[in-house]
Length: 166
Image (cartoon, rainbow, N blue to C red; front, side):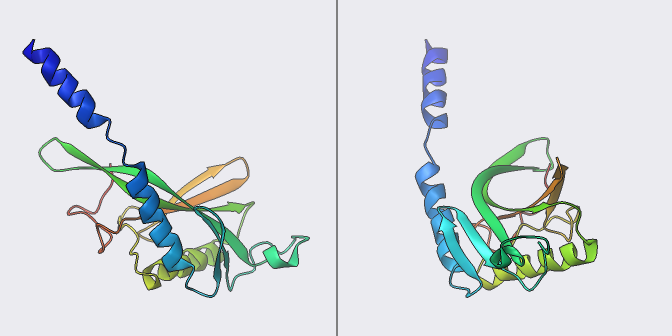
């Protein structure tokens, strides 16, 4: 009988809905970043950013030639605590998707510029010495490349103790 009560307690505690808090954190981030003149909210959790880079030179839409879209959504990040355990904490993923092959020097400058825009808005991206430019996860698929970094207002310095994701 004790096992059943323990299980029921665990299930009740593990089913806490944190979506409202995460949605509020994302709204706060969107509000902060859209105070920059180059940023505009397009949809909930999605902003368009006018950059100083020629990202889409072949676009038929002249307004899109130097723009990126950034999507914000929650993602659980994990790290080990050194004694075999791990911690999972929700962070806000900031994802940019680029189409086709891009000049890597330009991509590097774009990612640095975007990270500085987040920092200027009061959000330090998660620091991981193994990530691209210390902040960005890169994933290539089907002719697109996703670049993701993570922010969390509860970690204003942009890192945990060990700085590395599992």
